[in-house]
Amino acid sequence: MAKILVTGGTGYIGSHTTVELIEQGFEVVIVDNLSNSHEWVLDGIEQITGVRPAFEKFDLCDRERVQQLFRDHPDIDAIIHFAAHKSVGESVQKPLKYYRNNLVSLMNLLEAMNDHHIKGMVFSSSCTVYGEPDELPVTEQAPIKKAASPYGNTKQISEEIIEDQLKAVPSLRAISLRYFNPIGAHPTGLIGELPLGEPENLVPYVTQTAIGIRKMLRVFGDDYNTPDGSAIRDYIYVVDLAKAHIVAIRRILEEKQKKNYEVFNLGTGRGVSVFEIIRTFEEVTGVKVNYVVTGRRPGDIEKIWADPSYANRELGWKAESTLGEALLSAWKWEQHYRKNLEKQKA
Ligand code: UFG
Figure 1 (cartoon, rainbow, N blue to C red):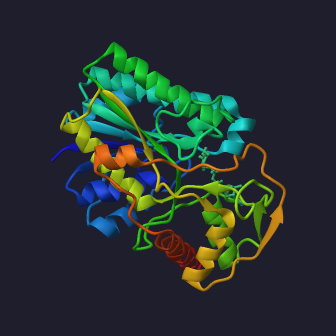
Figure 2 (cartoon, protein in one colour):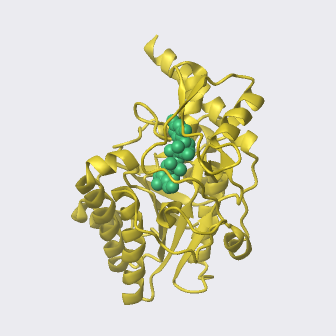
């Protein structure tokens, strides 16, 4: 049984991936500094899988502590690196926080990978590297555009750092997965997305409005050059996304890569507008979402969706869930989570 280090394993995508890893027989060690997540996420993982993964709370920017981790766990085979700051807006306000955290942690891990003979890394990247694409759908060959935010820039630079390090040490392996827009929660409703304060992302805003925590969803712009005027994204169900990580980690462990550094788009291949999200959510849950159309959000792009055919072909992976299923799971999680909060208060 291979042992995988999952950084950011109590976070949104990290927790769902940990569940899939455990269910497929992997042993997991989570490292997280809990800067944007909670230790009780481990309870959810344990309730779903029956296994509580090993957990170490520390900051990956601590170079010596990272080395210590690999001395304590000499049997780690590979890494899935999720841990990073991810708020686009905050990164504009606090660029150094983003560059320091996202880049130093990556470099510490790459260094330790080399020192401790770790096979490879799956890296959490983003479609943000494509900016506003010239051609749709977006393939992995699309040009990398100047990043619109320091956050986006950390993803671009991270990919470059990995590529350069793998050129220097050809025995290392890595796969960057460029996610489109992950949404939804585990079908049990026991783990899900946990935005701190007011959500930036669309789906948590929709579920919080539906449950009454937010008065009104703001639709950022209905004057885009799209069929209904609202912006278009490729929303991918988080469990489908999690499963792609298991395929990628096996590809590294089994040395099936075509070259030691590979990049894949992870999306559904379908573009969905903001209004379609609202309509589908209302259809599948029967709950109305109050919304108002406001101006465009600065920095937003008009439309983007993936060409996932390379991942479909090469990884033998495909996003399988429908938009309705994904939105229903997000709703189930919102309800479960709020009920739990009330219970804790009572
Ligand atoms: N939107 C609203 N109202 C909201 C929130 C979002 O109308 O309250 C709209 C946005 O304008 C956009 C769509 O919903 O058209 C999706 O917005 P999200 O914030 O959910 O997602 P983004 O596509 O803006 O951002 C995502 C990731 C980022 C990544 C970016 C790259 O969250 O990490 O894609 O494009 F950088």
